Image 1: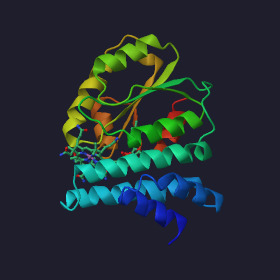
Image 2: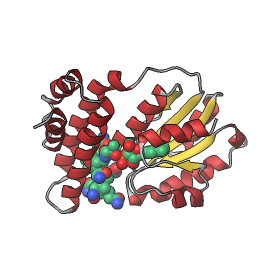
Image 3: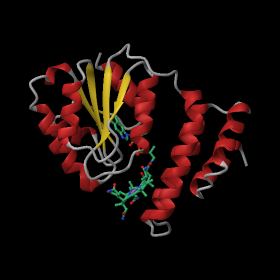
Amino acid sequence: MSGIDEIASAIETGKIKLISDLVLEAVSSGDDPMEILNRGMIGAMRIIGDRFSRGEAFVPEMLISAKTMKKGVDTLKPFLSKGATSANGQVIVGTVSGDVHDIGKNLVAMMIESAGFEVIDLGIDVSAEQFMQAIQDNENVRIVALSTLLTTTMPAMRAIVAQINQLSCRNRFHIMVGGSPITEEFARQIGADGYAPDAASAVLLAQSFE
Ligand code: B12
């Protein structure tokens, strides 16, 4: 089994104690960190999600896979990102109210940070009020990025974007949205400025706003 396959298997089966060593071994044997992330880690989360859909895995399995992925991403982070600067301005990120999924949001934050933006991460289950307070507290905000993974919290995303769109300082920043149920069409309907399907294209979108 290749190093990347071992990483994928460790995430699928929640081998939290092994994951850091597997990631470090794969990096030192020359595997590309982006390939480790995309094929090894994100691929494994997709598989566990499909197993959940088929009733073959349950919330505890999703949770332990998520924890293993987080630990793996923490280990991989120094090889992926160049570290924070605020050269390109501030980006506020958060997962919308009612939703606690944060792995995708964290990856978007990490990649955007490594592209030279300062990230202000509001975490999960973030309300419209919290987003608006953060926008008001930070003068250099260029982008507000909202994530959701649940179809049931898409209305919350719509409501939050609608409230942010009422702010008098709305022309100071762009709004981008993402998460697996979100589409370009939905982003346009709710009044966001852009949508990206993954963390790498979120960076390109952020840069295109400049
Ligand atoms: C791990 C997981 C969990 C973990 C989350 C742990 C954590 N800390 O995040 C736990 C166990 C807590 C969980 C709970 C639940 N989950 Co869940 N979960 C998943 C799972 C398996 C993986 C998600 C993940 O991390 N993917 C990997 C990341 C990298 O991908 P991603 O999040 O899509 O992010 C990428 C893009 O979407 C994009 N992106 C994401 N955000 C943003 C933001 C912006 C601005 C941009 C531009 C791009 C962007 O870039 C990211 C990186 O490339 C998915 C299955 C799946 N296939 O997604 C189900 C899934 C999302 N969960 C699901 C469900 C139903 C639930 C529960 C309701 C289950 C329950 N009965 O309790 C609860 C809801 C809890 C809540 N209130 O939020 C369903 C949602 C179905 C639906 N259509 O709504 C899914 C799809 C599983 C399934 N196939 O049915 N879950």
